[in-house]
Amino acid sequence: MRATQTRPTGVERTFGLDEIIVTKTDPRGVITYTNEVFLRTSALTEAEALGQAHNIIRHPDMPRAVFKLLWDTIGAGQEIFAYVLNLAVDGAHYWVFAHVTPSYDAAGGLVGYHSNRRRPDLGPVTAVKQVYERVRQAESRAGSTSAAVEAGWQALQEELGEQTYDEFVWRITNG
Ligand SMILES: Cc1cc2nc3c(=O)[nH]c(=O)nc-3n(C[C@H](O)[C@H](O)[C@H](O)COP(=O)(O)O)c2cc1C
Image (tube, rainbow, N blue to C red; front, top):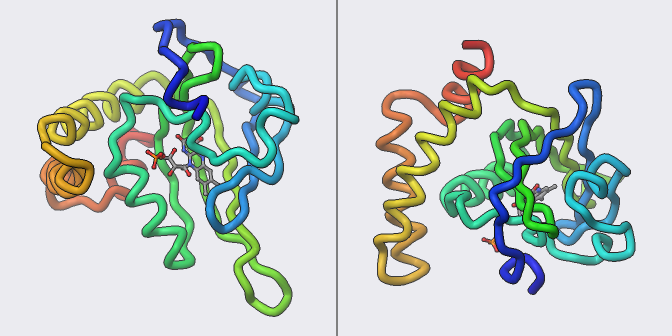
């Protein structure tokens, strides 16, 4: 997979404060729609992006626990706001503040998911980086993938303390 071949160059990319990165996926997370801002920021062409799993831009520093929370939440029919670090296929990275929602057809069947992402402020990114780094460290100490998921989930709960992830996100966003 291309996602695992791309090496982070350490170059940070941003996009406009007035821009929104949009993608849609099928129920399994396969990309079915992208806007131009997504393609430019991710260094992809539309032909390269459509039909790919969304982990095509997964950054290795992102904790598994955050994606578990994302899928658990949208899989339960709820929306989620999350800070995500992405890896463009040219190796640059970019932070987003994402809002992911389920989409339904007229009969109430799940069609897929829709993500809108804005450029986050530096303050919340600094806060979220510290939390994600500790969760990621807990994951990388684990001996297997399933142990990593468990350890990361545990570490995320410890980092959040009394707050839910949603409460944490809004506290740092409005902070
Ligand atoms: C609508 C939608 C948008 C997503 N956007 C991203 C994204 O921008 N970056 C990302 O790494 N994963 C995104 N994901 C999550 C991926 O599907 C995947 O769970 C994640 O990249 C972790 O991949 P892995 O399980 O291979 O580690 C999105 C999922 C959905 C449903």
